[in-house]
Length: 210
Image (cartoon, rainbow, N blue to C red; front, side, top):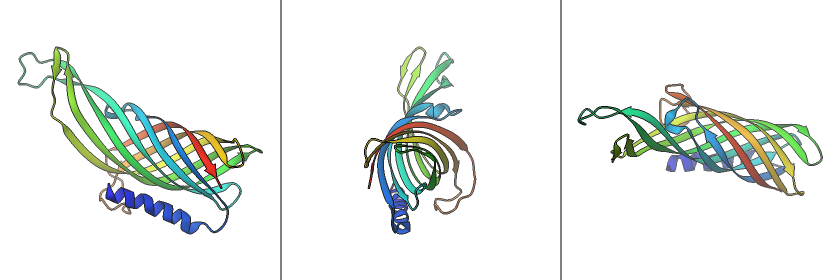
């Protein structure tokens, strides 16, 4: 956790160090997220924030972060110690934190609206919990398990922003991420390992531009 917080602070500092003149935008965002093909994290929601700096009219540099809350389930077999082996459902949850740094481009602009594309690279820290187990013939308390993984996150987003006023901006976007495990805990070692997974999210945002 301390390493991730330090990484997020470094992202903001890098953005600030790049800036000399231009507009800034600070946004809060939230939405729905989905992990296709991974029953541990079928769906959930996310909350986060984003800082943008515009060195030009259409190009911006960004740093963002989010916290994800996911629930999922899968089928499992009764433990051998039970008298009647059979199938049951396992329910568990995922908690994640991510920080990213990237660039964006507003490729269509009108007086109040903009369509944008952006790409990011960052770190995703995920914890998995298995707090309880449900079987077909009743409830059986499960052993609480916890697993922590650190993954590299490569993301892109396509979105729409609308200026309510010279300062207030609302928007919506689709974001997709590809996560893979790094071979070392050092965030600068961007080496591919396994397993990898995809993540999709749809977000709404509210921003203040100055």
